[in-house]
Length: 189
Image (cartoon, rainbow, N blue to C red):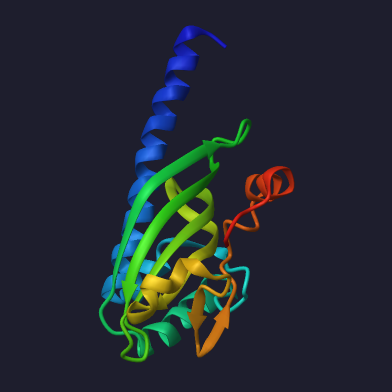
C-alpha cells in the first residue's frame, strides 16, 4: 500500500467514523422523539435488534419497527445520551464495522420514571453510501425505576422490565470480570 493509498484509507475511515457517530446519536434522538420513520432509515432490511434477556428482540427492519411501536405506546418522555463510542473497521471490507457504545437513558414506561446504564454492541453496514445498523445488542448494567436507583448496583437483579426483575447483562458476563473473580475473589457484591 502506498503512502497515498494509506492516507486515503485513513481519511475514509475518519469520515465513516463520523457518519457512524451521527447514526448512533440519531438513534437516541429518534427514540426520544418516538420517530418511527427515522428509526426505519437507520436499520438494514435484515437487521437484528437483540438483548441477552430477549425482552428486546426483533429480526428484520419491519419487526424492529413494530417492537418500537409497542414500546413507544407505553413510554412517555425519555432522554437517551451516549458517552464513549468505539468503532473498529473490518480489515478487508470497507463497508463493515463494529462498535461499542456506552450510554444512559431516562425513560417513563407505564408512567414510571426509570433510569438505565447500558451498552450497545453494534455491527454497522454501509448500504448505498449510508451507514446503518446491521445488528444492535442492548445490554443493561441496570434499568430500574428511579425510586430504586440508589440500591440498583448492590444486587444482581438490576433490570426491571415488564414487571420482571432480571440480572444485569454486564459486567458479570465479561471475561475480565470473571477472570478477576477467579484470581482475586470479591468482597461484598
